[in-house]
Length: 307
Ligand code: 5GW
Ligand code: MN
Image (cartoon, rainbow, N blue to C red):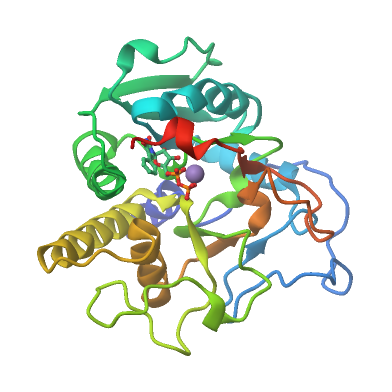
């Protein structure tokens, strides 16, 4: 009886026990040859995901067996609704194709949400939020809304969640290789820089403070995710720290991105996604970037942001 119990728990937890189907054939893996132009593991032994470091066929077959389900959140407040169509259509082409996905759109303009044909097992869910003129409010509310969405709706229904910026689109596969407990994406603008150049919050009075000599990477606020309970812990902590800062009239340099970076310093991500997973359309592709999977589109700030 005990043995049965343990087995079921192992198989039931989506991040444990990677069981491949019988009869799968694929090229022999090597621990001698592979990419040499990038680093594919952190000093705490989390994988860093780059094209050429994983086999999508193995990974998909493992996770298909588990029948996992994934939630994505995206905020489209005010004029940012204009980015939603492209985001959703390209997500249908590239984001966890063949898996169960629920996309949660938070918007103050529910009537303007585009009709996007979703594949079987995939669903678009619209949540109304009040309009807001101040980015600081949208930013603060993002973590809070993610926290409550997890508590009120996703618990017991979903295994993983990814929280993504809407001013972006998919270009190629973003799939099971990105799954992990706590998943962070390396910011495309800083990955070649020394850590003292990272735009962390540098005032000790903020709860997002990182001292000189601290910080592993600069992670982006525009994409993060992982197991539901890991992301719940992150959203709850970042939201609370943001609010506690606000009570003392302090706002971190890059708002929630600063808090996210502070969180990831203490709570190491168990998987790190390379800048393939959030490039920027205005940046020329560097040679180590073999595939751009997801990227921020070029936007006219004066046009989309509230004044
Ligand atoms: C952003 C900046 C200033 C004022 C308002 C906003 C804003 C952000 C907005 O008016 N509406 C909105 O939905 N957002 C959400 O926050 C979008 O999902 C957006 O992708 C995300 C982060 O803001 P971004 O994309 O402008 O930030 P960057 O750092 O990618 O340029
Ligand atoms: Mn963005």
